[in-house]
Length: 405
Image 1 (cartoon, rainbow, N blue to C red):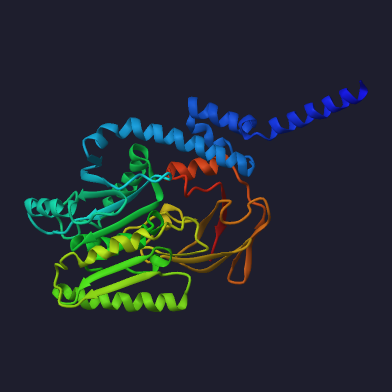
Image 2 (cartoon, rainbow, N blue to C red):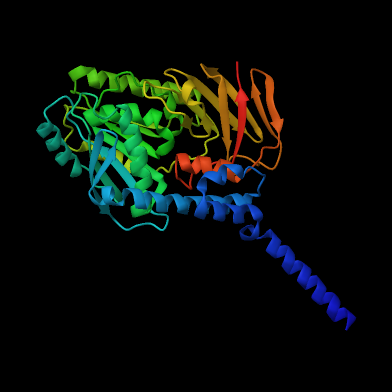
């Protein structure tokens, strides 16, 4: 009898321990569910340390909540195939190719040519772009530029539209956010040159067709495979020679950083601005890549259109200025800031796929230790991260705040 009670007691204790380990039963998760249902503004109060399992569950709950909010707010715009931000509208058309993978559809964003021309010319270019490429699998989306200006694809509102479109695609069509691709032809190629480096953390790969980079820098492409397709006779604006120069720049960058700057450059002999669809090989080339959501090294150079967050780095909005540059890398539990130009305040964002937030993390800058402690994984950080960008494949559960220079 005593033995039976002893065994029963152990079983009861073990069961209680299992229940306590279940993140569903933790006070933090219960509070999160309450705040999501009643007062999401209070989630910023949930700054206490949580476990890895709690962080995963919290991220899922927040993601589903935000997806529901997106659906309520944007369902009519999605059905009308027209997104509205401020004074601008982004019309879009999309088709599906192949079978949907278990992880969700791939997404291809394909920008039309045209530019500084009457609206009917850009409309005609938009119609062409809708039929230009056919991926083996995925959603092929062709947007209509909101303006008819020469820089129609690299004005500031484009970044916001594409960020919104990617998140809405996940809400309404269930995409794989690690398989989002960017391409564009002619003026759309101009946009690819500009957008890919400054939005590299959104995409898996990018392909530039017959465009001109203007003042774009390739530095931000460290973790984004980049394809260049150009006709050898496409001499307008010196496009052909500049494409070759970009190939040389990417060669040099990769030589100095062999794990980064994956690229492919094809200059098609005998071809002018229209490459007779020889450029379609770039669609298959892009499809072999998935986004590196948490790279071990980040090179971030701000362009004329600035961003506050890039991969696992974040700066205050007032410090997001043109030509600011930062290089940071991770090796085990040590993060090294290799370069920081025009950067004073910096947040390093952490996820368990980068390192172990339950152990000491060290941050080095100019041979000095700026941080040496155990970070606090917490729900408030997850909420902030997903509220900025609702993407379960790239969210952050802890932050390290630093002052540089």
